[in-house]
Image 1 (cartoon, rainbow, N blue to C red):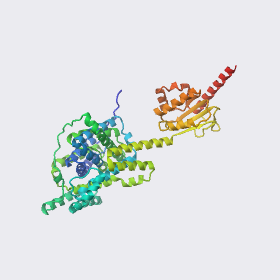
Image 2 (spheres, rainbow, N blue to C red):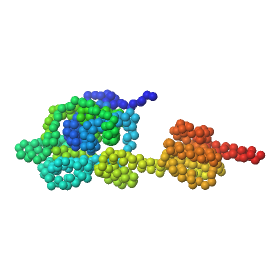
Image 3 (cartoon, rainbow, N blue to C red):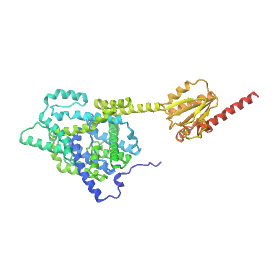
Image 4 (cartoon, one colour):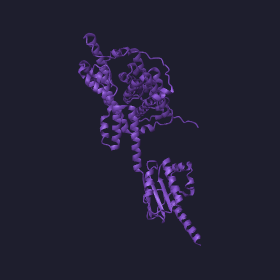
Length: 569
């Protein structure tokens, strides 16, 4: 059987590319590259790796995602959503464990694309997305308190509650100059867009605060403000790729973390691409996008990079500045490469408090607190999923949060579907006033012969509804001669529903009750045929509509009467 692969990179589908489009892409790419610079550095440090690793990720993954992706305007790179999961993996398994987990996640993403799960991933419930996004935002904010206040701490605990306990003990060591740098950075980021639309506030904050701190340290003798160079050794070169050993032991150990990276990357990239489609009017190829994300996350770790995905903020910056093809994303990656090679050593002068300010703004924008508040007014099921995912993300672990959140959502979805599916029993007369697929009698009523009962199943017949069918069977008093199972509103039937139907047919046969199926749609009928359902209900007793089913019931009743008369003679 030939595998039909849905892989169509947007770059290779460009038509009528002109000089004007290239100039627009060039300008957008340069601006996005400048915007991505402080974010890549901040995300790298917050994730527990050196700042150039964030830049390397933005360069390599950004290039691959634009080159192979299914969106015209998607910008890829490290994002805030990965900070917590990456930091946790490094704490538990080291940097080697992170690289292996990222590669496994890349393989999972490629498999998702090959299996055409790009559209399915979009149906993850919104409360789950908001829950873990808001949880990540709060956690990112929490991780930046030490650098924002310049606290003197030997180590920061990994879990949320212990962090705040440690902060409270160390709060007497607040370094006022560092705090002023952090607050100043936040204010610059907030107010820069009101003065300059094109230049990102985060870049302005980093440049200004780096200059101020440099002069304070060099000429005023103020040495207490920590900079990147005080904590990291900057390697301003593009490293050579190196192979990473992977075996079954490490795969088994890191598979849960890799799954979280893959799901998170898939959700964020497809959400970003969908938002971009709404602005540009384009339509991205979700399966191609997943495969491109997969390739990026397999290749980037070979250069020491961290997980990457589509970044909504950078993608929107690209669109707002005229980028309309993947060329803009490729240019953004090249701009970052030039910055790394020629300006990389200067990053050591950037104050840590300034980066903390940048990440606090990122956390605020991620928090979606208005959406969070509005979902709290929704049905209880949405609120339960939202709060469960949020608190699990904050207090425990993002991997657990996503898994438990999805589990809750699936159970609640099944509950809702089972509540919408109805099973009813009709005797004597059937109301056909709302029918559209059969010929109507003059009075919109269909009289049922004595001894005939109609079981109407309205909705999917799956394991969640099987008990309802059993309950209806138990409350029936006098046994009928014929049971018509009306299935015109059954879109699908699963193995449990099929099993219950088989039990009904077997018990009916023992009691000499004939079962007739009515209005079975082609998909459901195909399932019945594949499971050799003719053993229980012969093809002649499967009717296209209720009129034919009642007609067949009359024939069966007539044959019963004929058999009785023959016996009496």
